[in-house]
Image (cartoon, rainbow, N blue to C red; front, side):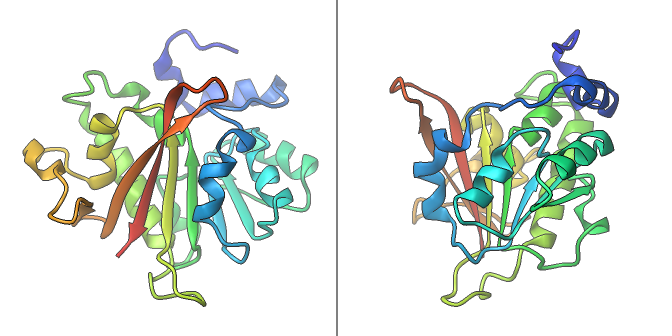
Length: 229
């Protein structure tokens, strides 16, 4: 079901109506399409949270690839009910990705994965160079919640930094401001440090990105990786 305008992608009512009839839809890229770039960032023992899961098979594909500790959330109770029935071996929870503190204790996960979830939030941003404040606040709430649920970076054996991995269509010069929390600050705040890393003082993570290369050899989407400090 195609919405009247892109702003509908940020509305819960739109998704409830869409999920009532739609069986499955894969946003941006399938698991196989990004597997080669994603799996080096994961360990089989990782506790993984997939936010804004929708009716994609992505979480089930992760499970089938050997990542057995996968929890998936969406704020549409309708899609969570359908996905629970379809994939009972996985954990599904109706929860809001902008209010993760309400659903999970601090330090619950090694990895949080977002595939096109923040993309839905920014559909209401208006001018991407000067986005609506409500969108900036929603994305900030999401990032703060993600940081809350990620484990301390020293956790794990062997030690490995907790990671927020985002698959998005957003160009780096736009998405970086959301993931660094630098809206309202001079654009110089987005520049990398002397080591070539983008560092978020607000969320206490480093940020880097890769182009996602499609089977045709073109790249249309991006893989953002935030590693907790």
